Image (cartoon, rainbow, N blue to C red; front, side, top):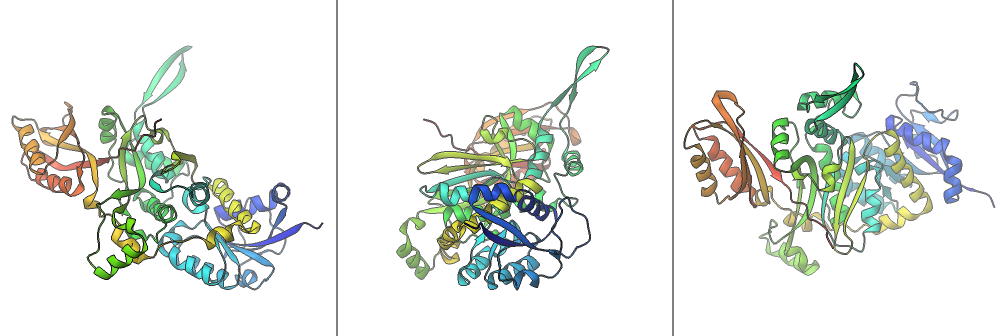
Amino acid sequence: MAEKIVKVGLVGFGTVGTGVAKLIIEDADSIAAKIGLRLELACVVDIDTKSARPVKLPDGILTDDLNRLLDDDTIQIGIEMIGGIDTAKQVQLKILEAGKDVVTANKALLAEYGNELYRAAHKNNRCIAFEASCAGGIPIISAIRTGLTANNITAMYGIVNGTCNYILTQMSEDRSQKSEVRRQKSEIRVCPLSFSEALAQAQEKGYAEADPTLDISGGDSAHKLAILSSIAFGYEIALDDVFVEGIEAVSKDDIRYGGEMGYCLKLLAIAERTEGRGQRTEDREQRTELLTSDFRHLTSGISLRVHPSFIAEDNPLARVKGPFNAISIFGSAVGQVMYYGRGAGMMPTASAVVADIIDVALGNSATTFRHLNLRPRSQTVPLIEKIDNLVSRFYIRIMCKDQPGVIAQWSRVLADHQISISGALQHEDIGPDNTVPVVIATHPTQQKNITAALEDMEKLDVIGGKPVCIRIVDIPEDKD
């Protein structure tokens, strides 16, 4: 019996595209042995057809003409690896209209226009596979869509940006180096790096782009959270639904003070179902529509946010170091599960892309995509929690003048806004204008109360500068 060949066309021959081509060409035999199909790279499209890449393509398949892919009826799958939004969107739409399935790792495009692209795919009776869009080599999309289908997912907490995790790791750790000095072992203590130092090191090692804005601003994590939460909760999620705060203003002093209180700082992408606090619509017709479709939607909201978070130092996510990613998911039946691995890079991402190609070739993706049932925006918008309604604990650092009566003044501000203190510490470090740092941890309170209290604190004559505030995230424990 002749071996079935599945022809694929690749658009974008950059870093990840090169990795995809490398796997398809060099591992063709082992892939065929596993799945009974042979993948054939029939066409590679890129505007740069001259630069050398670390993979040798068969003669004649590299071109700058997209029509080579679109007009070839023997090519079944189009792989979009060019990145960006506008051009990539048009490329994906053209591939779908040409009657071919799409495989992509383009998180920014899916976060912005995923709902539109999904509708286009359904219209053309095609599918879009996007495993590599959210966590590199971690198969998180398939885990949510198939492995956890029997669960009502209640929460996700993810470290989904390796650049930020590397920077925060370098800002957090005292690293000791052993050296041989005159045949005697001595320990040299290397202090944590500042944000700028850690960023420069991340760029030097290739973990951060020359322009790291999308990563350190939290934007990249927000793209991934929008995609993951739509699949997990079954709604058309828009990027604007996600509250975003980056790590640019994080100080290693706050990381140190938080560590003394038993916390580790991470940039978390968080999706949670909340009970009874979601933004509600006052539109009677829309409420009736929601009530008819699913009464439960009126009794719970969805909180989507990306921000620096203090978590307990014994939480598994606190032990995720360097450029690695991890996502902790809570399901109604399975409890807590955690997925860990390399979230970026040529070959980890290519691994996920080729896995999607195989899934499409086998026909599995078409079935899964056909049953991708996302409730429309009219049902989503009323459920999205405003950040002001978030209930959390908070870390606050204020620089207080070293004089009598200071504690009474800032304590009164917190009391006036119904904020209770769970712990505090003060160092003798001397800051600007003869101030000393005072660190406060609060009991759970609403974000809007904290915001108002910080504004009032800043007005006090005994407080120097703007108070620092970081959310403390109490991730549930899954115990027997």
